[in-house]
Structures are given as structure tokens and as C-alpha cells.
Length: 142
Image 1 (cartoon, rainbow, N blue to C red):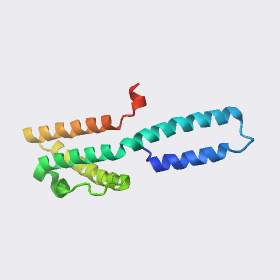
Image 2: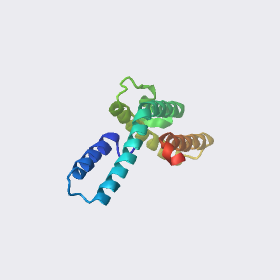
Image 3: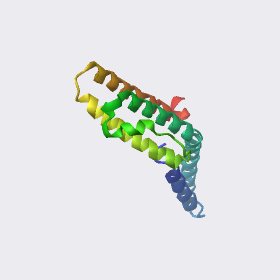
Image 4: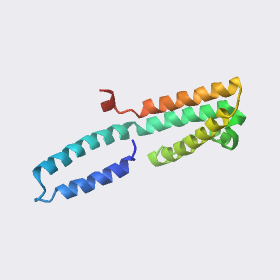
């Protein structure tokens, strides 16, 4: 979920505090509470699956970098790393490094004219599609 869960929760805390004042217009308070409820539901859904999604995505990105071999360039070493720290912040930081490496790989194969480069480019696009699907909220599917 973007923005990240801690930022959403901090914003919700402010929203609740502002609406705790007795002189807030009832319609404004009702709107703020409805928004808060929706955001809390989305945050709960995102938080529950965040570690699983990040581990799965990091694994897929590492496999793609390993498959790319030398084409991964200076980021090839990332293929041999793992997710030993399962805190969301650590998984997200690893994911950011892997995504940056994926972008560099994509640039490298885009400028290359070979069947192997086209295959890798297709794999990059496929991973980006799968990544988007992993992030879809259940509410978005309804």
C-alpha cells in the first residue's frame, strides 16, 4: 500500500483528533469517520499480507536477476541475497533495491537486439504485471 501503512495510520490519528472536538460539523465528522473506516480496512488488508507479498516479490526479482546473469550488471550480486530480516521495513528496503536493479536490467535489455534480450524484457514486463496483481486490494476486485 502506498503511502506506507505507518503514514496512513499517522494521518488517521490526526483525523480522529481533529474530529474529537465537539464543535466539528456533524456532516464533516461523518465524512471523516467514513473515510477513516475505509482507510483502516485497507490498511488492515495491506498489513496482513505485506510480509508475504514482499517475500514473494523479492524472491521473484532475485530469480529474474539470476536468470539475467551478466546482463544484471553491477546488481547481479543481489540475486544471491535473501530475506533474513522479516520486518516490513527491512523487506521493503530490499524490495526497493531489487526494483531499482530491475529497472537497470530493463534499460540494459531494451537497448539490446537479441532474442535473449527480448525474452528477458518479456520476463521483466511479466514480473511488473504480477507485482501489480499482488498489490491489488480485495475491495478493488469487487
